Image (cartoon, rainbow, N blue to C red; front, top):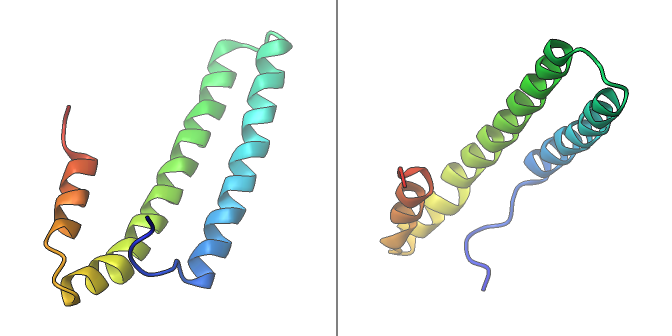
Length: 91
C-alpha cells in the first residue's frame, strides 16, 4: 500500500534524468570491461556511477523528508521517522 505524498514533478524529472545518465554510464562501463580496458580507467567510471547514485538518493531523501515525513508527522504517523532510521541503520 502506498503511503505519503507524491514526489513533486521537479524532483521526479531530475531523478529520471539522473537515472537515464546512470543507465547510459553503466552500458559504457560494460563495454569497457568487454574491451578489456585498463582497470583503473574502469574504476574511475564505476566511481562516477556510484557518485551519481548517491546524488539520486540525496535528491529523493530530501524530497521524502520535506514531503512524506512532514505529512506523516502532521497525520500523527509515529513510524515515519522509524522508517528513516531503519533505512540507514547498520546491519
